[in-house]
Length: 447
Image 1 (cartoon, rainbow, N blue to C red):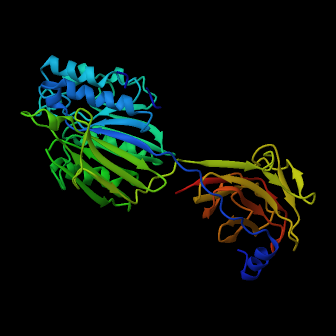
Image 2: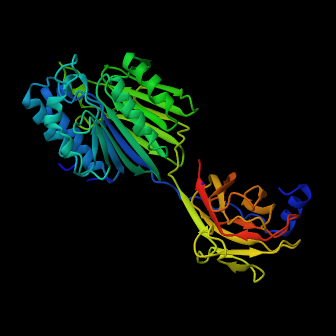
Image 3: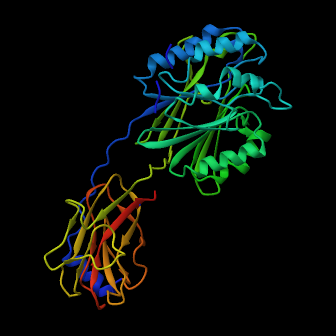
């Protein structure tokens, strides 16, 4: 069984004049629909590895069979892969089911207490022997581990549903040093939607001491966390909370382990993300039995899943082909060494509608920072009007081009509509004196 790699003023009178003499914004273009995709969560497989390996194999065979139809992007194992870490047969049964992580659907594991050599020392030598770091480094999604040469704690990244994802898997009862590492990883990926996978976090709708520690010192602090997944307790539940940055985090727990009966051990979670409707559809299914758990704790839909768009930025220079337009009244100069690129454009101030325009193709409606680059000089204009075309109308920001030259200067954050009809302009219509400069514009997505 194969499990393949996936791998941004003028006064009131002038503003009114601008709105009347400049072209108004076009209707927002329709955004392209993002793909719906699935993540599979494997709760504790310890007794399947010990007594019923056929159940474990059926789960992962189903993943392989369904990966195209359901667009399965990742498998998240919440730990307790085996029941007894000193039993070779259990590790072999698990590996026979899981396959190598360089196969069709990548997976990540948050080692549980039963996977450790000792819950006192939290050593994971046996786990690292059977699921070593080296077997994951070939994944395009592989990010890194802690400690650096072990697979105790690890992070992977992937793209699905039109956004970027970060999965951080942490072993049972993370230490302060491990939490510090995880914070550094999440902080380094601010445009990724972060998921925490760990073994013991909550019992149904109540956090345990590990969950409270992780929430307080990691999850609630990072603005890009969206989900946590855990097992450990034979229960199922969801806790939805806002972090300190206002982001909503859905904390989801499930475990069906049973040492005396085969069938409860065969259930897994099918979690389908619909970025367009902002939902997470959760179903609990047994491939071995071909049946679902349909009670409210095991089949539900979470709404208002607010996903972070991928980082996006673009620069339009005055020489960018088909992206910059200006009349013959705008001259070309290489006088200042503060210029962006080969040259820049200049014009005398005049009360006419003769702006130089930068055309920017916006990928999706959102909030963008607009920054401008110009050469500064004591003889240049001290009130240059920059025009930002937004869905609600043209917004004008004055910039003193006698200062802060040779670097990006922010005009602020603006709502821009998806499509190729968005523009940033540099106007000559100003009460200021001195040349008006048009050089380059940078637009960066904020949210």
